[in-house]
Amino acid sequence: MKNLDTKLRAIELRAQGNSLIAIAELVGVRRQTVADWLIDCEEEVANLKAIELDTLREAFLISKRKRLEQLTARRAQITDAIEKRDFADVPTEKLLELEEDARKALENECSGACIRSERELKKAKVDRISPVHRSLPLGCDDEIFSEARQNLIDVTHLVIEPKRRGNGQKRAPADG
Image 1: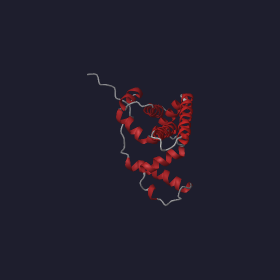
Image 2 (image 1 turned 90 degrees about the vertical axis):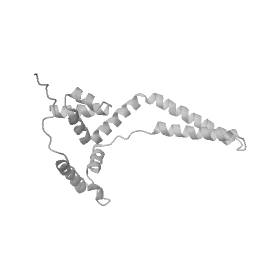
Image 3 (image 1 turned 135 degrees about the horizontal axis):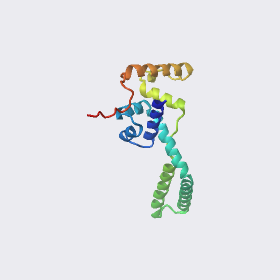
Image 4 (image 1 turned 180 degrees about the horizontal axis):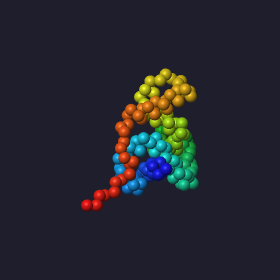
């Protein structure tokens, strides 16, 4: 299926940070077609971006681990020095600032993007597309409501999306 392969390639290229124009040229479809695909697959693109980021993080895991160890050791040294100090000593304020800076740096190093499961992606898509879903009572996440939500997505696509013409392929320039 060329259209499905083309759409998947467009989603991958967007996750890698390519512009709509660049993607359209690379996969051979109109820019508006690419934009429509990406709107439909917003959650999948975000998930692929998270996977790409995770791959990069994994590649640099050793250096990150080393930075974490250094920051942890530095924070421990600062904390030990603060505990030994008399708080009447003026430089203690500076040590408290350094401890806070080290804590913030550790928090920044440990934060990351969240990779979602297919089920979480579907639920996020329903939340984005269907305002009706948000009005369901709490505790309605069983199979019956999941199926109802999916049916609502399918119906919403029929109502919201205009009928598209053509196959999404770029037209060849007319000789003339």
